[in-house]
Each structure stands twice: as structure tokens, then as C-alpha cells.
Image (cartoon, rainbow, N blue to C red; front, side, top):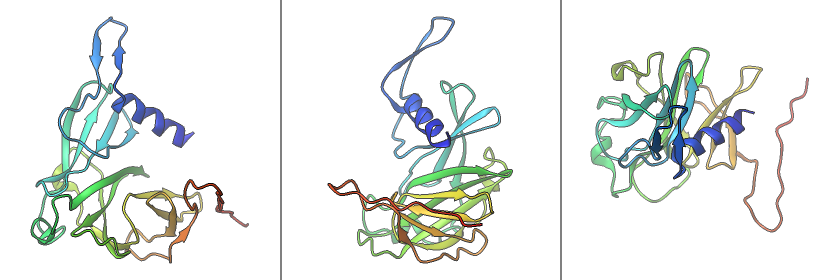
Length: 208
């Protein structure tokens, strides 16, 4: 159900379709104009929130808010202080480097944004992962200093299990446990080997 809701929300926002309201007014998507790659969207309370890539633009990692999926406003930026990732704007050696493909999540009263910072094209399984946290996504200054972790790949995501375990997923295929306070992780394991002619899927099984 959670995945279905996310897919539906993403389709509503980014697909090039028209949305007609009960007042017979036509709106056109995409509704967030400009360059907003890799959107990650959630629904919390009365708002929808979307975080997008910003690469080397500062302030970075913008978060947008909407009550109706039509009218959007900039709520905050996550990356606003040099202390969060020192010399981030100077260390990247390629134009597509920096902060991209963030994932926005909400859990137990807190908003989390997880992301990797890329300084070159090596992708050597030791990427700088960052996790930011806030209780108020409308206040840029409330986003925390990041918890750093070593990421094996890009496209990070977080999942909270019922027993309190938090899982980190990267590139859609690798899974590991993560401590959100320290950034400590378990060794990654593959849970999907890609869409090849022979597909094997390993499911996470919980034992009581």
C-alpha cells in the first residue's frame, strides 16, 4: 500500500497530463517549474512535500510544499551551512557532482532527508552519505547537521521496520541496517540482481 501510494503520488505530480478540478479549471503538470530532478515526495498531515536534487547550487536540496498538488511553494532548503558538508561546493570535480537524488521520509514526528554527496565519477563504494533531520520542514535553519555514513551506491532510501530496525537501501538493490544516530551500518547485501533473463529475489524474512 505504501509503495502504491508513492507511485500514485509521483505519477500525479510528474506525468505530463492535465488535471481538471470540480470547478472545471485546467492545470498542467509538471507543476513545479524549472529544473527539479529526482523528486522524492511524501504526504504528512495536510501537506505534500517534495525534495529534489540541487547538485552544486547553494543553498541546496530544496523542499517544496503543497496542500493540493497544484499550488506549490518553497518550504526550505536542507543544505544551508558550510558546516554541514565542509567545502562541498569546492570539492566536486565534475559538473554533475554534489547533492542529487535525495529521499524524503517522515517517521514518528521527524522528517528525514537522506542523500549522497558525489565529488567525482568513481562510484567506488565509499560515497559520502548524509542524513538530515528536522521537525519543521518550513524552517531551513532547523535542518540538522548531517549524520555521515559510508554509502555503497547512490539513490539512498530509509525504511523503519516494526521492530525498530532501520534499513538503508541504495540503488534499489542493496540493503543494510543503519544506526541513524551514529551512521554505523552493517555490510550491504544484494536483495535483487537486476532485470536480467534470470531473476532471483531474496526476501527479508523475520524470525520470532
